[in-house]
Image (cartoon, rainbow, N blue to C red; front, side):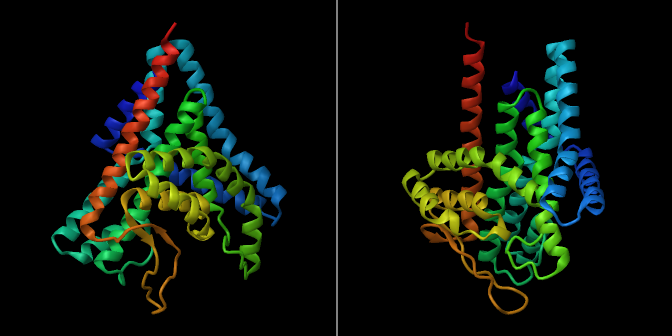
Length: 320
């Protein structure tokens, strides 16, 4: 049943984005901001209470509705699971954003590629060269595909009904909203307060990421260059800065770069003139625009591998 729901949701999501998705995410973010404004006294305990108040309602609603649908009929449960996955997964966001950037760079329109990258990941991109745009696109794509697809699929499969998928997406949005200053500088009272308040949400996301991010990295290794992917994962992943995603993003970029034979990370130009120095991730050649389809192919092959494993698990559960 889970396998059919996943296939149907992926097909629907590639066909057409659900227009409600962005609105529901904005509503949850507004709810999180309201909790933070009312409960943030700068302590971890208050952050823990706020995290529970933010996470439990959507998870309980999804669990109860899923249980009621399953009691009513298997078909209704399937439809509900498809709807929740269709609402939560964002593979189209990754694939279509990368496709737009690939097309722009192929025609030599670096300005359009920069604009598409800025719309996707945010931040300033006007100072980036075509190689920088390609590198940032691959980096954002690997992390976004994990956050929007692989982690959601893992928790949807592990926990009963759609509650796991809702739990993960809510935790990811909450941790992003309550980031504070992850660099540890905390140079203002507001940042110090938000950093402590958001620590339970960050810790919850770290726990939820622990297994699926490593399975995703292993998938990249299996469908790419296994030896280089594992070597880079083992030696480089912990060097990635906390403000850029920490070890979770480091694992994805190191294993993905190794699997693709690409050198990710490194310096990026900035508007201030001083380069943004980041650790090197992966191994091999400097990223060029024509390498981006290889990254998309890596993600697709990893997704197919996951679908095959989920199918095998489904058949095993059906066996007498």
